[in-house]
Length: 533
Image (cartoon, rainbow, N blue to C red):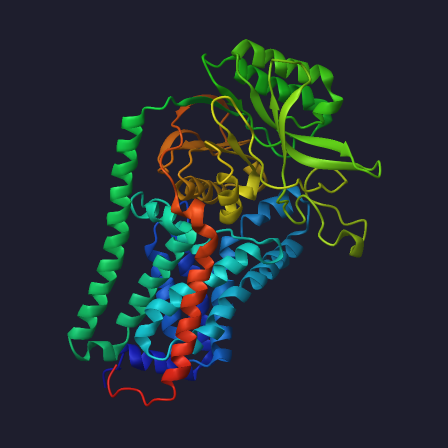
C-alpha cells in the first residue's frame, strides 16, 4: 500500500510523537539561520520559519512554548558560534566551558521564540489570522530582545533582506522590525499554503498568493520609488561630499595590546595616514587604534597632531581614556577622540561609549561576583559607561559616533540621528569575533544608514571597513584581514526618515495588533466556528 505523505498525515504523525516535532522544530531553527550574511538571502529563513509555524498550528500554549524554545536553540546556537573565537582563542576559556556558555546564551535567547510559541495560539482563532498574528507577535518579541537586560539584538530576522537593495528601503518606515514583520508574513503564507484543506478549492490558495504578492509588491514598489526619489534629490541639491579616509591597520588581536609594540602599531596608523592623497576632510581610525591612554602619552599625541597638520584634516581615533570622578577614583572609558592640528594636546571632541558589552567590557553586578572574574577586554578594571548618544560637531556637518556593537541597536541609533547629525561614524574592532561575525555586523551597520537616511562610515581594525550612502549603497570598502587606507567621497544626508522621527511609536502599533487579535480570539471562541475555513 502506498504511504500517505500528505501534510495533514505528516503533521498528525509529528504531533503524536513529541520528540519528532521537537526535532523538526530544531532543524527548522537551524535552516532559518541560513538567510543571514554572508549568504544574505531571505528564502532559507522564510522556509524554516514556515515549517515552525506549521508545527505551532493547533498546539497548546505549553506545547507551543517548547516548540519555540527548541526552535530558538536551533536558530541561535549556530548563530553564536563566532563567540568561540573571542571566548576560547582570546579569552583563554577552556573549550568545554565555551561550548556550554554558547548553549547557555542560546537558551536564554530562545526564551523569546518560546514566548512567541506560547502566545501565538491565543492570538490565532482561525488559521488565516496567522498572517497578521505571526508578524506582529514576532516583532514584539524581537523588540523585547533588543531592550531587556541591556538587550542583544544580534541578527534580528529582518537582516536577511540586507542584499535586497530595493525591498530593504522600507526600513526607513519601520526600521529593521518592519523587515522582520515582512519575513514572518511570508513565512506564514508558506505555513498556510502547506495546509491540505486550503487546496480543497482554488479560491483560498489563489487569495492567499494574491495577498502575498500584493504585500511583497508594495514593499518592492516603495523601495524602487524611494531610490528614484532620493537619487533625484541628490542630483537637484548637489551638496558637496565629505572626503573621508578609512585607515585599517589590521593588527592581530593577540598582539594589539603588547606594550613593547605600542609604538610600532601607532606608526603603522601614522604611516598609512601620511600616505593619503590630499585633500581629505576627515581621517578615521578604528576602535582603540591608539591602544594606550592618550592623556598619559604626550609624545604619541603630538605625532598624531603632526599628521593631522600635514593633511589639514582632523583625525578621529578610538582610544581608552581615564578620568577621576567626584570621589577621586579613576573611571576608564572606551572612547572616540577627535584630534585636530589646531592645538596640540587639545581634544576638541570626545565621545565615551555608553552601551558596553557585558562581560566583554564590564562584569554585570560587579559587587555580587568574585573579584577574580575579569572582563575579556584588556585591563583589569571595568570600563564605565558614557552619558549616552552624543553628536560630534564638525564645520561640514555633525557626526554621529558609534563604537563597536552600539551600531546594532536600532532605537539608540535613531535617537542619535534625531540630534541632527549628517553622517554616522562607527569605529569597531571585529578582530575579537573571527570571520563569521564580520559580515553580519557590517550588515547591521548598513541597515542603520537606510533606516535613518544617513550615510554610514565604518572603520574596523581588521575589517570589514566600508562606507554606505543614505540608500545603503556601498561607496567603498577595505576587505577583511587587509592593511590599507582608502579615501571615499561620502555623500551628504538626503531626505528624511519616518523611522527617525516616529520610530518610538512602532512597537505600540505591533503591540496593538496583538491586543486586537487577542480580543478577537476571545470573542470568537464564544461563537461556533464556520463550517469551512
